[in-house]
Image (cartoon, rainbow, N blue to C red):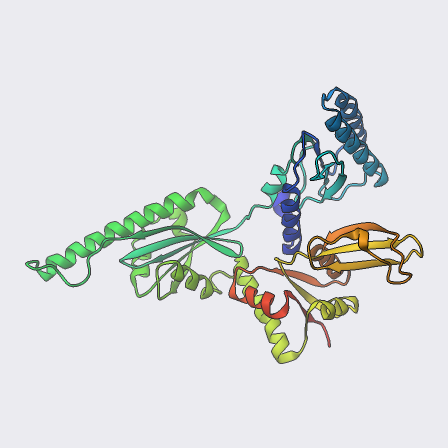
Length: 415
């Protein structure tokens, strides 16, 4: 088995990874002045440094003085950074992004960002463009597991794909099968036979649609769920109209009241045992575990200050954070008294230049680092041996956690 298939990626690491990709995708250069450098873990140091030196020399041919200055500044910054870390790369390698990210015309703001890939980098890459090159990283962030869902009766059918914690409707189809009251002049037997023929044609059409939709997913499709009211879903399944590759991964059937999108939602909500490997089921379970701790055992904390304090004391067993948290953490060092502070900022547009040291009131401070709050909390959890779960807002439980508990909670080891 290939090595990358053996790599275990934690849910928290993947969420942080995706957030950083979204952030980097928003940067645009005024010209081809944003540099992306992909460094596999076993890349040769000398080869990389020589290439950067060569690129610096070649950049003197850039016609635009502004672009030339920004590219050369970015290359120097990358070289200095690699020397600072003594070219010690993380186990999966490292991606370095650098360039002028200023939104103001004529102003230069050359910044350097790094990103640890969630899977091992295989190829060294140098890329200079008007945007950062993210395609190989975006491929790493694609879901690896999918589940197919069909809600069906004799009148209509809805096909959906469960991707991670949310579903996507892929098609809704009607049968045209007549109701049970027959037209005048038709015998009951003939009318029922026509209804059955129309229903069978409909089932064949739906099976063909499912084959066309789901077979291309190959081994990534982990299972199929057949839902709907009454016995129609069982009848459809027993006729074995699906391709044998899909038929063998049917997980089971679920009773639902509807066969439209509401039926898909019902199927997802009521299929915990059948979809025990799906992310959405795991999320529901962990939020319910947290709610039980809040109500029954008291082994829970929620709210920013209480959870951060519990983490600090090593009391947290499981940390829960809403994925939609967009807070930032600014780490400052006062130039007057050397006091260091980590400041959690909840509102966008924070001006670090207005910061004052809480110890000596000096406004002369250096911004050492700015990180996402989720990333910051995940690292704190790792330091204390706590597990982290990221909760989406795609489920009722996730929305309740976000709105009712501020999107920050913890299950404790002890009170």
